[in-house]
Length: 248
Image 1 (cartoon, helix red, strand yellow):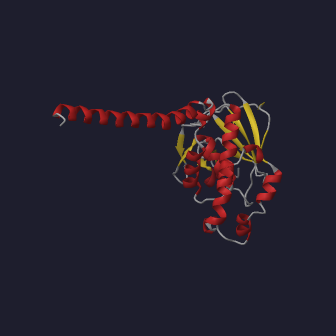
Image 2: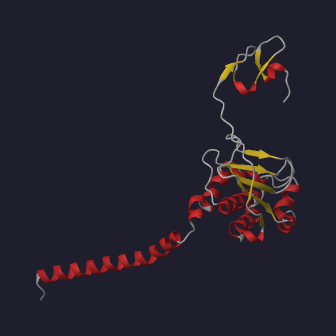
Image 3: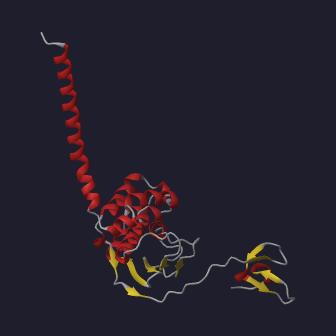
């Protein structure tokens, strides 16, 4: 018959073995993940993860479609090429060649999600050329890169069931998931060389303006207006553009 001491000793040994086994499992599972994370290029770590941007882009954009994640992928590729991180203020500037009223305009929302260039921060300019391309400018160095969707890829995309539904007048949010999801999942996993044309890094002139902090009330409507958009009317009153009749 075993003594109480032997039983306690055996129980302690069993607990120790179980704990050791659990530790080994954790090491085997976690270590490869850490190795992968540590093996990522520094630029990619600073840029952020595709899944994170996709989830943010869905909330910002409002519906699931192929063009928005294409913009995210393109924006991330441009940032990686320049070796920059997402714009917190006005470090980056986007010159978009997209237009208005054409298919896949959602591309630009993806670019904004990835790069942090927005209309609110005034670090985006839309040229309205109706092309699926943009140039990302690092305003701190003057380095820039142009990224465009490959024509063959985009021509095929315009023949997709998703676009056919859109042509038939179906809102993007009402297109069946069995049509939308496979396209989106493919875009998220596709090698960027299959759909992106990434140009050479080149230099561009950068104009660094100062933010306007001075504002005055329009002498006609009374609304506070920043000084750079005040106008002097014929009667000498300092007024806002709507009250002046001036057309920019």
